[in-house]
Image 1 (cartoon, one colour):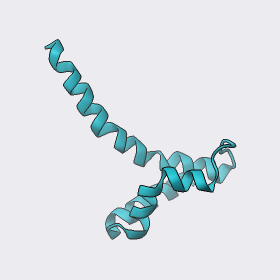
Image 2 (tube, rainbow, N blue to C red):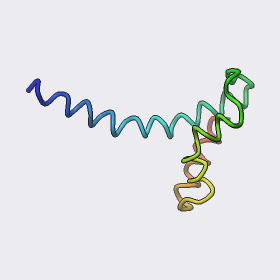
Image 3 (cartoon, rainbow, N blue to C red):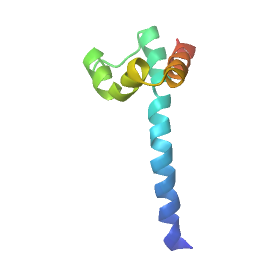
Amino acid sequence: NRKERWAKWTLAAVGGLPVLYVLSIGPLAWMASQGKLPGFVDDEFVETVYLPIIWIIFEGPEPISNAVIWYEQLWR
């Protein structure tokens, strides 16, 4: 049983980290709207870190793009 725990934790990390990454755009939008972004977070940083999400918004399937935009706007 103990030998198989690493597999469960690995699966949780592989599945959970991408979800947390996408969900992190909401708090980022809130912090930006409140002017509470840390000093190192500028436009270049956001464009680099969130390039996949930005791509989805502009080039991805419309339902997914709309969902990401809707979620981001909830935080503003």
